[in-house]
Amino acid sequence: MRKTRVIAISSGKGGVGKTLVALGLSMGLANMKKDVLLVDADLGTANVNVALGIPVEYNLWDVVKGRTDVDNAIMSVEDHLDLLPGVSGVYEATFWRMRDTEKLWRELDGVLTRYDYAIIDTGSGIGNTVVQFCIAADEVVVVFTPEATSITDAYALIKTLHKEGYDGNIYALENMVRKVQSDLVLAVSLKSMAQRFLSREIEILGTIPFYPQISKQVRYQELGKYLHQSDEFMFYMGTVVKNLVKSGEDLGSYKPSFWSKLKNRLSKMMGT
Image (cartoon, rainbow, N blue to C red; front, top):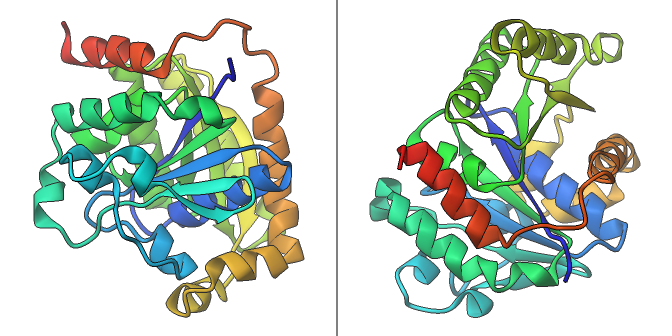
């Protein structure tokens, strides 16, 4: 049976390019011929399909509400890359509950065996919904930018996951870096904070430079095309992808079903 690595892409605050990282990482893995499912779980403000210019018939909210099954909602983006679109502009979805998380992942558990990776683009912050999606994942990538508030909020997310008993790998990824010579400085600082105050090890995946053209491509709904044509972006993202793939090479041969892992983690989170 295929071992699917479920990886949440999250952040302590908005505006750090989390969705860009989730999409770039998914595309980079797909380029390596890894089968990837990208799940847009930024509830209420999901925008992956918009950035790609892909019309959507069903989304994960339709799956949770029983209006369709997960197979109908999943759509192909390109070779080796599928998308489960998120929900945007639905007020009810902002009141996401634990049972909604359980319903979604129960549905997903049956299809994850088709994929090598499931990349979960979560919301930002340390609210219950974000934490639930992170807890559900095997690993979490915390995205931050070279700003004091961003690194503080990134640490807050790591601290929250640690307090909730999260036992998966946590990675740090610095995005929107404007000075190449400052590469990894803040990531190392974040790693040191986690070691010193939480006795928690986190791994550094790398850095991604700032690209002012990105927002324009999102407006034009051509982000995917731009990323494929940007050799520089894909070079940096390729390094991140290689580091991530390498980090999983020591995974054991046995891996319980995703649904069983989720139940165990959510039970710990609820204290039951």
